[in-house]
Image (cartoon, rainbow, N blue to C red; front, side, top):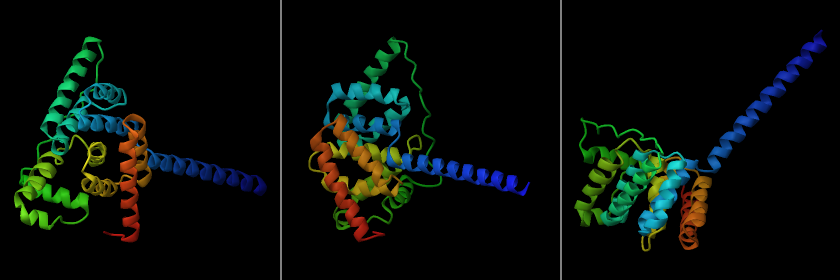
Amino acid sequence: MNKLITEFLAIIFAMMFIIAAIAEAETMGKNQTLSSKQQGIIPIAAFTAKGDLEKLKVSLNEGLYAGLTVNEIKEILVQLYAYTGFPRSLNGIGTFMGVMEERQKKGIKDATGREASLLPANKSSVELGTDIQTKLVGKPVTGVIYTFAPAIDQFLKGHLFGDIFGRDNLDFQSREIATISALASMDGVNPQLQSHFNVGLNTGLTEAQLKNLISVLRAKVGKDESSRAARLLDGVLQNRKSFPGR
């Protein structure tokens, strides 16, 4: 009898070990790659930034099939005006309107998704934005450029991080994936791309997930964009290892 009990307990412990190993493997797998929805954001943001509306149209359809809601895509396109300018953003929104019209004519019903909640009534946009910016960057943001042109500091805190990032129908990781993808597709913005790689890591995106983002850029957008992004990400990762906590 004791032998049977011992064997039974051994089997139970073995099963528990296997279940734990499977759970750990699944967790590690999730940390290695972006979800299908997250991957769908990448070409949408990139082609909006590049102004390539034909490829954007394809990417918008793919994003919807990947599970992005209509309101999530709207939010991405609206946010991008802060990085790509109003013309690119408006063109992207117009292209999305056309895509939605075509899909509706075909009888395709896409998930609308939820609207953003009202911003907190007890904080100004600047106060809310300062809190969000500090959280994402990891410390209060100061610098000579903001002393030289304090208006840009107010716009960044109050409008970008308060009015836009404060909208809760798109999480911070998705917003950073969109921002990184757009900046990687634009020339002359390397410092900003480096900064947002750091912010992306601060939101909980892993090194492997950011490398996955770059691989999607390479496959969907182009080698030049992915090579520049890979080089800058390597520099960011080396700096974080050399100066942890910065």
